[in-house]
Amino acid sequence: MVSEAPPFWWEKPGWQAWLLSPFSLIYGKVAGRRMQTATRASVPVPVLCIGNFTVGGAGKTPTAIAIARAALDKGLKPGFLSRGYGGTLDVTTLVDLDQHRSVDVGDEPLLLAREATTVISRKRVDGAHRLVGEGVNLIIMDDGFQSARLTLDYALLVIDTRRGIGNGHLVPGGPVRAPMDEQMRQLSAILKVGDGLAADAIVRTAARAGKPIFVSSIQPRPQPNFAGKRVLAYAGIADPNKFYRTVEALGGVVVVKRSFQDHHHFSDDEIQDLVDEAAKLDLLLVTTAKDAVRLAGHHGRAAELLWSSLVIEIDMVLDDPNAAGSMIDAAIDHCRRRTLQQK
Image 1 (cartoon, rainbow, N blue to C red):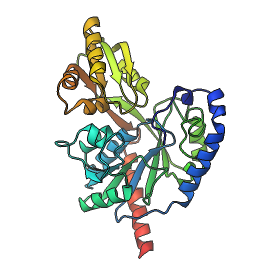
Image 2: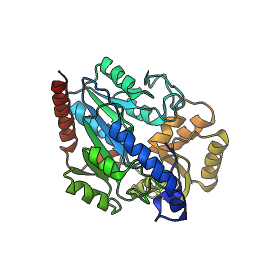
Image 3: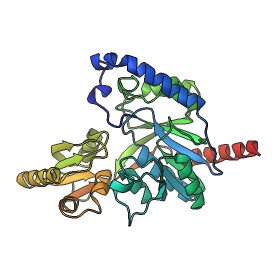
Image 4: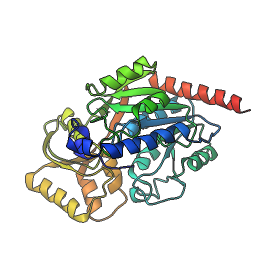
C-alpha cells in the first residue's frame, strides 16, 4: 500500500493518472479479488472497523475515539486495534504510554491509547485475540477495511467532503484503495466529515444502495487568548491544509506554513529551522496532537520544540448525538447473530 499521497491524486485526472491507469487496473483487480475472497477469522466480541475509501487522512482516528467514548458511556470496555504504522515493533504489543514512543508503536496508537486499551499488530487477528484477553468487549479497528482478515460486524467508512475520493483513480494513479463497487458493497455506513461538496456523488450512490449516511465535523478545542495570534503552523499529517484551516477557525493568523509527510519524524536540523524561524519572525509555534506525540518522550531539540509549541487538540463531533451509539448497537447485534450461526 502506498503511504503518501502525491498532489496529483487530489486534482482533476491528468496525464499522470492516465499514464498509470494500466497499473491501477491491475491493482484494482487484485484488491477487489482480495476483498471478495478473503478468509476472515472471528472473535467472540463485536468488531467495528473505521476505514476510508482512499489512501490519506479522512478523520479515522478522531472518529474511532468518538466511538470509543460512546462505548464507555454505554458501560462497555472498548479497545483499539491498529497496525501501528510508522512504528518499528513487529510483534503484537499492548501500547503503554509510559513505555512506548511513536518510533516504537506509531503516532496514532499513542493517541488512541490515551482513551482506551490499544494493541498494535501486523496480524490483526492476533491483535484482536490479545484485546479479548485484556477484557475488551468491543474492538474498534482503526483502518484495515480493505485488507481485513477479521470478520467485521460494522464497517464505517469516513470521507472528507473537501477531498472526496480525489481524482477517482485507483492506486497508483489515484488514492482509491479498491474498486468502489466492492467497497460500497461491503461497507455498513458512511460518515461525511465537513461541509464540502466533493463527496456528494459517493453519498448519493450509498444512499441509493440503502446505506446509512452520518454527518460530522472536526471541532478544535477552544484556545483561550489565541485569536489574533501570529503563528508558524507545522504539521506532518496526511492533509496539512486541514490543520491550517483549523488554526484559522480558532482565530490564529497563519503567517508561515510548514508541511511534512504523514507520520514524519523530525530531524534535529528541521526542528532547529522551525524554532529559529519562529523566533526570527516572533511567531507562536502551533502543531497537531499527532505531531506532538511524535515529539514526546525525546530529549534535546525535540523536547524544546514540543515545549515551545501550542498543541491544537480536535474532536470528531457527529451531528446526531445518538449516531455512535446506534453503530455500536448494530455491531453488537451482528456479533450476536453470527455467534448463534456458528454454534
